[in-house]
Picture (cartoon, rainbow, N blue to C red):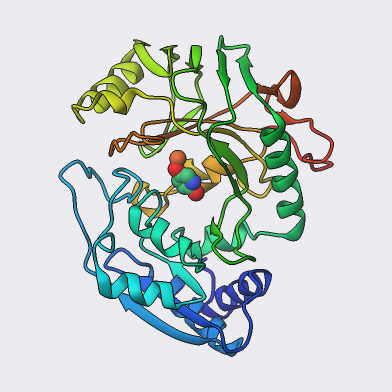
Length: 350
Ligand SMILES: O=c1ccc(O)c[nH]1
Ligand SMILES: [Fe+2]
């Protein structure tokens, strides 16, 4: 059964209160053809009920020939607002922008955040939003993970399946996603619950073995047969395995861009409300897979953009049963969060 509009409005009210939305603040809801009207309506009702001034800005969609399928995460790095003076001016004038279009990794988003506007991305369907409600404890644990990651200089990721990845860290900021925007200039994504950061350029080395059950987004399938990624100087230099490996390699080759093979943000999932199995129950166009990116204890590997790289090809690859160490300190062991200030009692690896 679907979520009722009043339930979704109550979820929005809770998230906007966590986002410290105050009476008289200006809220802009960014919409386009790919926005979910149920999400837009509930957000507008909740913001108005909190006595904010609410406007909706509808922008023309931008389609790229590389965009296969309906998922806006397939092609990253550009949006219709990047050079739109009207949209940028309106979004900079807002105190809080609700993005139902998916601007992530775009110049337009960066410009709006630098103006002090806070921005909350909300693209998942109502039931996923309601299942993975953010909380102050999620924020506490994600920020503890961010602080541990920030203190580090080297990371090591291993798994029984054969993953042996090392990298230096420190040059790039950490994205700490806990699902609401409670300070000026902050960006977040509801639903979420993970940390991610780029390794220092050219330092990721080793082997990443995608095991059956690991997920490749935006393919939105569970890997059936092992895929071995050999990584040298921050780039995947060889992909081997069976049909899954051939599909992955052919997909990346389709972008005709060497940066498509670069290692992108690396991190780990901290959201016990997100389910590894959820993706198997949805049609591919129905979700962008945030429960997969966020599930508790995952290793979130990814490829493509970051630093000076502007490639359109971005894959997020949440993996199970990995161990993630920062300067030898265990954050996750065999898919279970072990850092005392990050773990949730009773939460189980998935
Ligand atoms: O929330 C997100 C979503 C996608 C992504 O690549 C990063 N963070
Ligand atoms: Fe990503």
